[in-house]
Image (cartoon, rainbow over all chains, first blue to last red; front, side, top):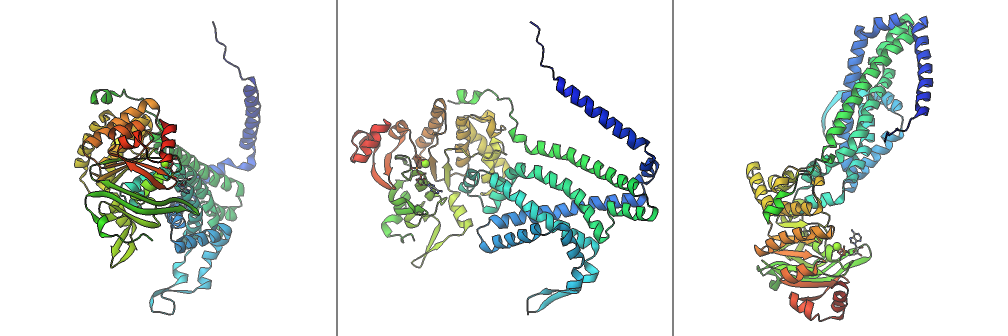
Length: 285
Length: 264
Ligand SMILES: Nc1ncnc2c1ncn2[C@@H]1O[C@H](COP(=O)(O)OP(=O)(O)OP(=O)(O)O)[C@@H](O)[C@H]1O
Ligand SMILES: [Mg+2]
């Protein structure tokens, strides 16, 4: 007998309606001369835009790197038995999650106003050296500190939930084998926590890529600020924002593809392989 | 605090000596003075109703739980404490780890490392804790896998194995550390009935080789056939201890008779 699969007429109708609306939008964008696609094309590969793009990529990677390392450290401190460490971690979270990133960025940028001379040493004791804050707290450092410290707070919560997701039996089994605390964490708990940590971290990374645009307020020439510099001179605001957005879209698309493969890699022990016949038992006994 | 040892308990012939071991979770006292001696090369089965503290006591033996009073010596060493000049000093984690390396433990829920293959599960601790060269560790692991009948599964991930196979891998993993004592906490309770036999067979083989074993179990057949002695726990104390035939044929206490009446 012939099998007639269920037909989804509703899907076709909504898809069609949506297609018409999108096509209309697209046509209006292309034909509206005020979008100035020729200017978009002209600036898409402009040297200063590409330099800004590179800065955005570098900031994203560096701030995310700081965030992951710091976040892991803070998560480990948070769950440690040592009350001093776990309270320090709690305080850090409280401050950096509780204030806006924009404020933190401006704060770090202006740190040299607060402490023109930064001295490293013991309170009331000998000094180990001092440096001029104006020279070293550059926009770079302010941007990295701001983005990295803020990200660290969010990453620590992600890492902590990942660590908590690992069954307690895993730690016990590892400890029963005589593994050191470090080894239990590095070889047993963290690798398993990865599967829980990776997906939200991918989202954080994509978020960070866009969040770097905030540092334009402290005049660091990343992608958005590069575009802004151009349009404040030639008043082509919309075309240059389209240029910046196009690059953000390219990067987030690439990251999403990467995320897919990384998640697949970490899920590998989940994929069942076809069970081989258990010959060994029969022959073994 | 655990009481200092006296000379009788330092006898080297005992793998485990426990005296008056106490342990509470919050206000709930789970172990109320447990006494036990396990000779080297013997198999001791711990029986008892649910909640009587069997698992807790077993876990004390490798310091997964900390005892609060009494005295517990495994392999001639106090568990988790160092005795010096009449005082007991709590050990650092690294010292506890060194003690644990000589004690194998098999859990009811297997607890294999799911992100590692069977072979990686087995060689992880010998390489990382004992510092055995990788080639040698793999060789020994394959010998152990042959012993538990799972040579073909060396490269499989735990999730692809049946419960019985996983538990046999867990036993091989514990044996890879060449422990002087093996602890089993209801190793077959999580298994489908038809898979229980294959795990018990492996344990029986171990007992025949002279491994010292403490086995918490509900398998009365195993306790009767393989156990050298049977310990009956109830309400956080050892109520009765004897040979399997004494215990199963002539239980001395009312509580043991009631328990046997239910399980046999
Ligand atoms: N980590 C814990 N925190 C609080 N209570 C606990 C903990 N572990 C065990 N207990 C309690 O201690 C008591 C004894 O538990 P234990 O697991 O030792 O019993 P058992 O004899 O092994 O029982 P079963 O046969 O069910 O495994 C139980 O009442 C249990 O609820
Ligand atoms: Mg139990």
